[in-house]
Length: 334
Ligand code: CP
View (cartoon, rainbow, N blue to C red):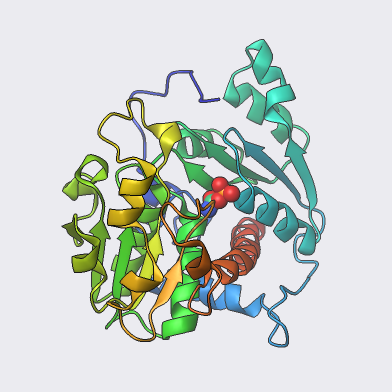
């Protein structure tokens, strides 16, 4: 259910600056763009601290006791929504998971009136997913000083917590970014996951980023200034250290003409055991989920030892705990 009301004509600050306080601390999380390497490293370190060294189960704390977190998901989600919910609860917050399809937005209430209503109930942190670009920043420009906005997936623009959990997973497996070849294959054109990962990898100084897609799903090169854009997976995967598969985002594609059918897609762009033989011997496979087995990834590969897909999900919980803690600290120490 996209937001339909008109945005203001002239943004006061771009998203990258809007999310920081005057002293450079993180108040909202809207995008990974503009966040320095030192801040990304600190967030990854804090996420790591939320993973128990014994069994990798995220630890609990009471650092958000007395705070209220509202999850507003205007698009479907399993991983992001569940992990923000669990993360907030494991930090001791009260959590409101609003069923937006049963909310008064269905009666014509604007998104800002909805936010103002929940803000009046002393919600401190809004977690927002929406199909329209610009919604998290639009809300961030209008909330009170004690409120933080966390982008949980914004159209095809940005998915910053996914970017962080992907960086964390790569760092855990490969230690540093400088010499890595990372390949993302699939529907790059419509992928907020690819955009946030590319932004984070560029900041962390990745060796090389290759983006592989059918021509009909290729991105605007201006969106990925430091990446190599390719259309043959064998070329892209050769020597790669990290291979991430993406699904085709059918919900963002108006006209499916020109999009390969399932068999053709798997034959040319599916990540398989056979294709992984071209990658580095210790290469890892990733997927942000939800995945379509047998289309963008061979089912048995997704469950194989080189697959980090389950680890990505666990890391997502730790990353969301770290982000909730970080913005909460910023607001508390202002
Ligand atoms: N990766 C991701 O955002 O998954 P969900 O849509 O299930 O949240």
